[in-house]
Length: 283
View 1 (cartoon, rainbow, N blue to C red):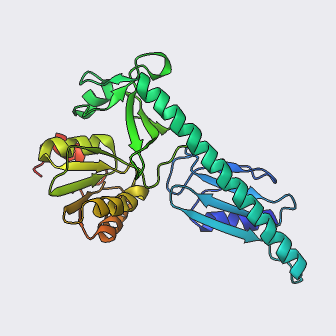
View 2 (view 1 turned 45 degrees about the horizontal axis):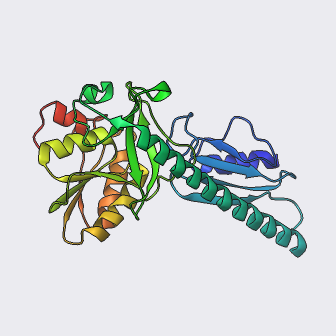
View 3 (view 1 turned 90 degrees about the vertical axis):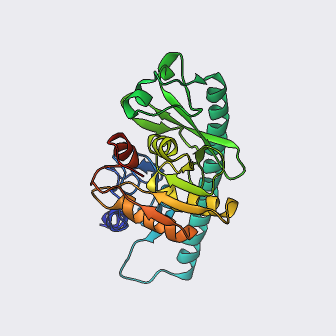
């Protein structure tokens, strides 16, 4: 029953728990509102099955859980629980740091070997956008794959987004994404922020404005704050997606509030601004 309490707490936080819960092992599973193939969330159940933690990298969520029981936990038991949580936290942070360093090293290696993308790239052709400096692989499993660089606030290359011709997207395992971005164009008085590369490319081509890419809805507000700090006098507009579940709209509004900017959403459910531009909408 205690394990079910843990599962129920994960679900109450808006996450879908992993199919199988085991003790003494960090389990990766889908983040909030992510497909089941996503692995942004983590959970850990202590060996006794009466305590643990779970987190979601995509939202910053972190929760600690301890099972209820008939008699009160002694001070010694409470202290032991706190110490176990602290040991796990330190180990988890070390693992995250090592994973980010490994991903950054791999990103640099892949990006240096990649070639400049051209309009003949299948994904670019399907989205009807230019490469704007993006690269692509020319051999092995990366042949024809669009490669988008991802930078942190210090403008260090920390990760890559790899986009298959069919639009399937993935990032390097363990790489940083929160507070990270890429941008198209030089600084302009009006700055736009979008979720994805194709949307950003369409907006840049249609308006000539500099456009930042946040890579997902959950990162929009983080990037908006960074853009505001670097552009204190700019007009910032968050160009959100019109998601059926409301995620894109809510994230765009929150990002606009975070940077003192505005936000715009396509009029049609299921569309982003790449869809709108390709349909001939005026901006």
